[in-house]
Image 1 (tube, rainbow, N blue to C red):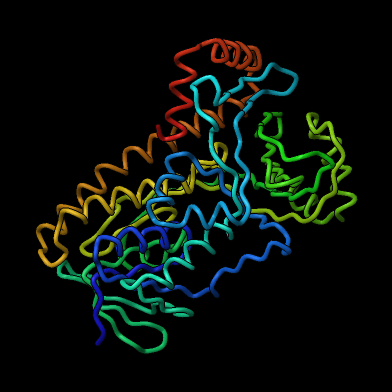
Image 2: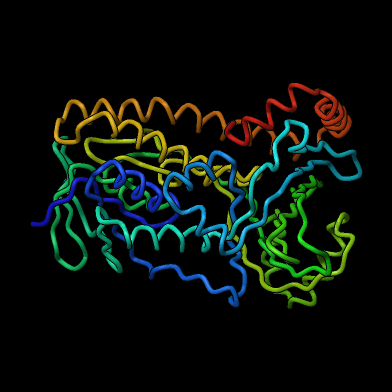
Length: 388
């Protein structure tokens, strides 16, 4: 039987960043990942999966030693964010209002993952098992005995579940979830515009659901189109030319020409683990919580999980059961409430703008106008979203 101090199931953005931060503490880390290593080629099509990276997340990626590599590939800083309801005035957040150079970055997931993997492969305290899968494990307070699909067995003092919303580790550990379906899907559409790189991201709320524009590097952009499941299926069946016409008819604020490159859709769900750990298994990122992607906070919450866990393990010995359990309790206490607050805030925002009750449109417009002119309060919200 092989041994390691920390085994991480999942080499995505959250799992890989956790591996680097924990390995930098001097811990021996083993990463299990079934998918092939990510690869970035500037000539490849842009990834449909993009993330709005906050300033706090940028700081974490710099701490993990990968920010320079990310910036050298392909990123798009954004300085303004606008929210409006159909036909109304925009609530606009501008980095200049709080003397900051930008609000964050829109980056393709594969760019971030490629940089993280390059760093993991070069790190002396990280061993990559790829492609590999966990078949089963025995979870005890002292540690976890893991059996891989290959038949190999390992013993880890801590098993980190960073294996996504359908986490095998969470389910196998017997950790329950509270979840519901928003009964909507979101279509992501990559377009090439006839404009130079833009620095504003915006979202508009209409009766059928939100629509959003996210700038990407160069003349490219990503559109997010929320709609009922049947409508997204219909849109998914269209050719790129037909989809462009549908976009032009519905996205009122696209005042430039563009070409549709590719599109894909996914369901909207909310899920929260009833506990963030059990014995020697701990949950990070989507394995612990999924959120409405409306404000782009999903991966940023995952990075906050990583930072919190790394802080706890820096001062607690994994070999001491009591210390390890205290570290996991403190991690849960620090992160679960914050994640629940963000989930709930996004739900209130989403449902408020989805409501068609009489008078709600006028109330929303009044609320947006008040928020636009709230000065210090608006700036405080902006700083919170940035992690400042």
